[in-house]
Each structure stands twice: as structure tokens, then as C-alpha cells.
Image (tube, rainbow, N blue to C red; front, side, top):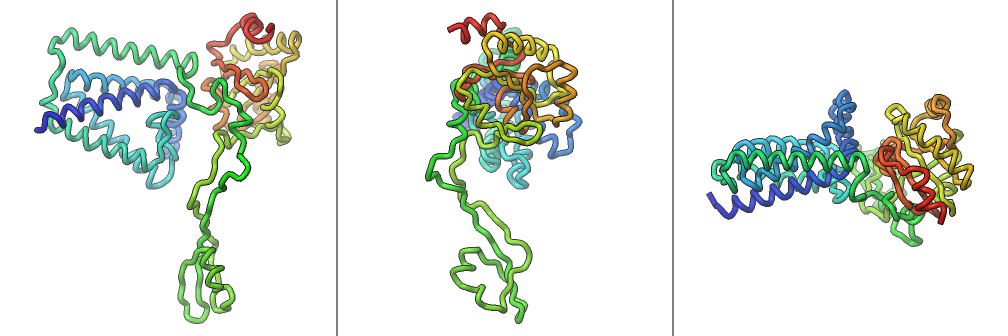
Length: 383
């Protein structure tokens, strides 16, 4: 047994698990959205109603196991738990990479996006280190053997990680890594600079010689270069296959399109409004807090009457569902529609609120941390 390697593995794995857990705990709703993707892939959609609680549990578990490994407490049990977790996640990332079912594992949230193969490679390294820890788990020495101190430290770690997780869930992520963060200019985040490189694709043709029966594959470039199209014996069979070979410039926000019930595009008009406007985001009306909608209704009425501020209600539900929701809650805001993916990125709450001016996100709030009308007036509108 190499003591230096054991200590390195213990510190490296422990710190990485704490870091990974904290990053995900910073945005448990975002981590929950990623879990839903995995549940759908593995036909476990019945777990979706419990996804937020499960996301919180996994974050706390990662942080706790990482901390216990660093302190050396209950080394055998912790090493066994880590091995079970890393085997499970290595399997998930391999499936994601090999079958391209989930494009990002969410290992480090949106702070450090990893491709599926990068995620799998990372998990393989961790797996090797954790297997080493598991083999020599009996050599892991605690910083103290006092059972009471060990239990107190565990309680503090669990309480602190739970408190942090609940705080970010209630008041939005402490650090926002998404393109709709406070201070971001949405028009700039959506813009594609002039002359920016575009995606490059390779088109492959399946060719067959009508005389000899010979078959082969050929790229579109070789098809033109060799002028095989002039030879009447060769013909293209089946459909051409297009493959991305080089990624071009991709704006930070590439999937936001806001439209009304008829499909008319209002994206540019709404996000480039030079005045203050309030965007209420309720991506899923079936799970929207309707008590908060009542408070936002009252705020909408006062802001419209006193400051002529435009308030927009954004959802990914159908126009029919939105109309029924509007009647039931007597909505005063204009209703517009967008895909659920960008709406989930706008604000990690349902509903959540963004205050925009000239396309810049001035501030954003969860429905659980909405400022009062007087606070809005004092900070923004009475200046």
C-alpha cells in the first residue's frame, strides 16, 4: 500500500465530491431538470414528481461523503458508499456518451459544462481512485477517534449543506451561471457577429454501380471532385447522411423565441424594450404557485396604472391551457409563449420574475423572494 497515493486519492476524491455537491446544491432545480432527462431515458418518469427532493438528497449526500472522506471518519463505510455511487454514475455517463441520450451530465451544473465523453472520462478517473480507496479502506485513518466529535461534525456538515440547498432553492442560485443572469444583455447574448464561422457539415452518399453492383460511400466533396456524377453507371441510393464535423459560433442564448397564440414572433420587441418591463415566467402552469400569481396580479395592476410598465406572462403550455389558467386567476398580464428549455433557464422558479430594461436583466426573483411594491418603487421606479 502506497501511503502517499492513498492520501492523494482521499483528498482529491473528497474535495471533488464536495465541490460537485456544492455546485449542484447551488442550483437544485437545474440539477432536478437534468435528473428528469435521465428518468425519461430510462423510462422512470414516475419519479419526476419527487425529482427536487431527490436532487437535494444527492447534493447533500455528495457533500457529506466528501467531507467524511477528508476527515477519515467511518472510512470503510464511506469508501463503500463512494464506490456504489461512482459505479452508478459511470454507467449513466457511459450510456449518455455511447447512445447520445443526454447531451450534458450536469456533474458540475452549468458552472463547468462537460460533454458526455468528458463526463465519462472524469468518472473513469474517479472510479480508479475510489477502487484504490476501497481496496485499502482499512488504512484510512480519522483525524480523531472521538465518536461524539465525529457525530457532531457529521451533523454540522448535513445541516450546513441542507441549509445551503434550501436557501438557493428558495432565493435562486447564489451564483448564477446561466445566460439570463443579472446584468446580462439578452440581445447581445443572442447576437451572432458578422463573419462568425458557421457549422460545417459533411454529407455522405451511398453509391451503387448499376452494371457491376459495387457499392461504396463517398462524401459530397469527393462526389464533386471526382466528377463521378458524370458516370451514368453510378447512382446515389438511399438518403444522404449529414454529419457535423466542425462546430461554428454559438450564441449564449440560441433557443429563445417568444410568440403570441397565433405564432407571431415578439422576441425582439419584448427583449429590446427600452423601458422597464416585468417578465413573469411560469414554464409549467400545472405546477405554478397560484398564490404567488395573485400577488403578481396586484403588482401588475399598480405598476401599469402608476408607471405604465409593461408586464408579460411567459409559459410553455398550450394557448388553451394558458387561457383557462388566465380566466381562473384573472391574469392582467399579456400572455406569450416560449419553449420550456429557455424558460427554465431564465429563472429557477415557477413562477419567477425578471425585471428588464433595454434588454438587460436588472434583477430577478423567485416567487418566494418577491420584493414588495414599495421596495420596487424605491429601488427602481422612483429614481
